[in-house]
Image 1 (spheres, rainbow over the protein chains, first blue to last red):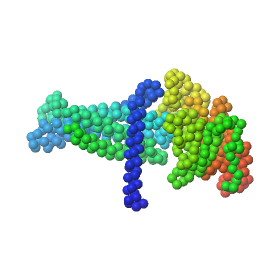
Image 2 (cartoon, chains in turn cyan, blue; image 1 turned 90 degrees about the vertical axis):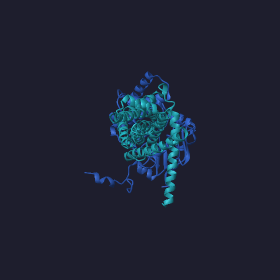
Image 3 (cartoon, rainbow over the protein chains, first blue to last red; image 1 turned 180 degrees about the vertical axis):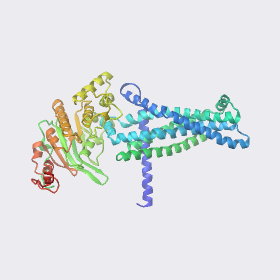
Image 4 (cartoon, chains in turn green, blue; image 1 turned 60 degrees about the horizontal axis):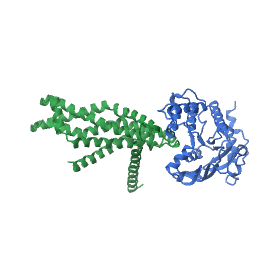
Length: 265
Length: 278
């Protein structure tokens, strides 16, 4: 195969992948809004609550720990530079805004990719390999409805919550630094953080969390649904889900940041 | 081989046959890449009959079954089930046809994250508005029908291979389907359990007069449960007929398969078993 042929094939493959992701996203959204605790769809509600515990509750300590450490690192690093200009107070602004707008959603997403994105892909891929997905289709049950929709809804509910928890942890960790470096009490630090944060910062962080959550679930499920081969295929799909999710989350972060920069100053 | 006379589905219509077939396959051609798996086959299955699809490994039996289930799409040809052409059906029509069918998979395909009871109840929960208590009762009944009791709260991993197959069959029966499809029902089971599965199929056949399509290469089982048999080889149908007709079929490949003669040995030769004699 010539170089151009392989580039062409790869481009077609990528376009096809994005198309499949878009179709799955649309169908997933349609099914997700119909999940409710009543009637025939109550089973999905039950599966959704289980997923909420799996995605949200079990990821909470890691998200808080990683976000807290990042908040502290950022305060230490920026403090070291800002001290030279006598602008140590700006540490509060820096930690508050960057955690809320950028690092909070990103860290929560990356932790969830590692914990849940890979697990979603492995679960779906195993279901494909063991013919469970075929069994669903043979029973006239849409796998996107039964498998993806509850996970999607759980992710949309839990990733913003994890993001909020991560942002708080990061900001609090920054507060520990300012307490020792600036003699600023935690209460004053929080009050100042609340003053400098704008509605735009909070909304952009939460919108990013929703976008990242969608990417994690859809990429995880698509990789799982497209698995080929046996157990080694499950391993490949899990790796693919993690790598593609991280890549797409960072790409989406760039797009969202640019959007809020240009359209909501 | 190709010079041998081929029997047609029409020439062997059994006494159970209704006027038009419930499942009609016409010119079904399936390819995986450049490899042709099914080369334009025709097959009719009539209401109330048990059609056993036989053939050596890799001949396209399971592929045919996947197409009948609407899990894969052919390159050419058509499959019509209960008057609906599968490849051209809308999502809603396909769902309706699928609700007419129960499928027992080779691997049982039980949902490992759900209990046996939840597995069997799943089609009822998905397609009916029955109350929980009614669904629980029906689940118990379906499990009893396949000879399983008191396993509702166990997980599939806690069951033996034969029990998993029975549980899978109970799930396939949940919506009282018109057509039951079996993919290798006794594969991987010891002869006693396999015979139990055969008896179960016979009981269902007798009790409900269901239309059954069974894919297998277990000859003993096939002769026991079949009304008619269809032999596939290298992607085409070699023979269709009743049990007696298949037993007496003149096609050498059919005779070889029925008599379990390895490739390279003549009929009547026992040379291939001498190595195993004391």
